[in-house]
Image (cartoon, rainbow over all chains, first blue to last red; front, side):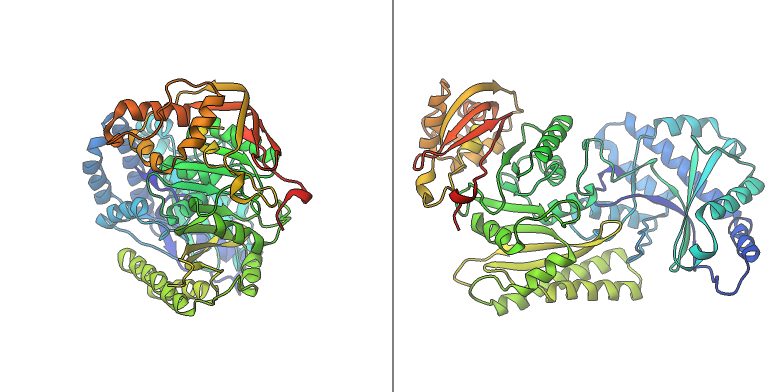
Length: 441
Length: 125
């Protein structure tokens, strides 16, 4: 069931979370000592997390035997046992869910679109092996483990990730008698130390959720692709176009989630189309997605024939964007139905260029202010249901509003929503536009 | 390329405008690929179909049993929907050509993918 979380990267069971290390004036030895205290001060949280982890493994094995219809009682059971915390590398939001809130969160993940876009790190996995192993290691002493550590910010200057990992590893061996196994451990411990927090957790799944079984070669990150598709409000019977589809990641994610839809992908590059074809075959979706070799600024489609356009506009690092963003948007606007939706992934650069060009004719200022409201509403809903801490939520809201405020309408395309997302090394923006009728109503 | 797609494609050679539809279909290799029948989806596509274009294309592919138009109450007519499902979604043109009716420009279809890129002189400004 956790595997249905599509816009999240990895999922961890939290062992410990506390304030970042103060490294300014302490010696390395002192830091090592502090880290050991993570474990020696509070072995309970560690053991607690381990037992939850084991429960999850057993539950998953049981679930695989039960039919789908019995999902609900299991959900509740998980809710009682767990405090699962979703964590994000860029730390824009921290969410704590306890007990029944977990249920809510999971339903939200699958039902609400785009609210968890800035949330990262949840996992998806095959647990069969782990169950067998966990079953064998009823005695905690037989557990094999490995520590993965990531250091950032000030502490990274004093301590390398390996050193940190080693310290924790040794402390764990001392405290619990576990054995280290770097190749194929039962249990993996993840440690993130940076300027914002010090966190320790156990990944729920071995493989990140973001790596999908049905995508052979991913172009765009699958989590972002899914998020874009869900923001687009795809309804059954719609005609969805990705005019710069590349390897087809967005269409694949969309077709898996919303199957009763007509999908068309287009690209100018033969190699990309070949890759897309390959992906479609591997996913078994050749019947659902059509491919065309056409240019985005010259779409061989009648005007107003497309319901939804979703696209990742090439950022210019990997691919050369031969045409400018204005002509791209103009052609997209032409083929879109009135009332249709466009969802684009834009770089900071693209946004700047769009801000500079006002598109055609009327300014639609009144429309501009109305469009702020759905954005703000979305912020508030997010806050209420998931209990983001005060300080963080206000910055998220501010970010969101800012995102939207600066974007002008493009011709009859009215900006409706905007989300800042992280692509790992760079940031990008998901922009949603709706086509209003040309009378400017 | 499926016939549902052909039904939407229109030539965008300079100056052609709406007379660029429909594209004349010729096929040298056609495959029938089974696709899971989803009556709701097919029913939703029916109102979007340009029937004359579809019938012409189906004719060029020598397809039999192609409905001439939507029947009364087609949404519940499974026989009709199954036929349409087959015609629109299961017939794949793997190799062939699409020709613009106005300008005569020919677009190739290779490995099931139509190539409709125009060169500089042909595009609209």
